[in-house]
Image (cartoon, rainbow, N blue to C red):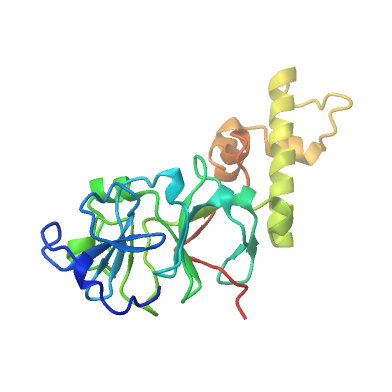
Length: 242
């Protein structure tokens, strides 16, 4: 985030937070006390910036040039985001019951998730890197150069072809195992392999017990059609890490 100078004394308020603060819109600061109108961000005279807990309106997505941050959704990203280990994230991989809200800090190049604040507030999950008075905010930046802190983790489900080869092989074996089990159910057999099933004898033997399959977490995932790996990140990067 950017430091706003000079501090907008004419716009500052006190009552809501018992501290001097101003609303922050896309085009600068404002003295409006209605934080539900075009001011999803609150800036304090300590240079701390928070994103309020409400769900932003569609018109509030975009760049906030005065404060050097951007608020967007994963399905509306215009530039790529990267994992700390250098994996470029595709839009389609942001799947967690729909798209995910994202705050991007231009100065540090970090992006954090902001859309699960209600869960965090209701469960009273403490975030030690956020001051106590801001525990219920959707995102927090301690000042210019400080890393943003969001709510929850990004949930990324990459396609199989970006996984390590060993993991790809594991998923392929899982698919074969599940197909073999469904063949057993369909033909109601446990010892004979139906002609044309495409299932090897070894694979058929491996799935002769449904209890064994139930203990296989990966197989349960595959049976629900979500056997893509789920990766979680506290933050992502707006540029490829060097």
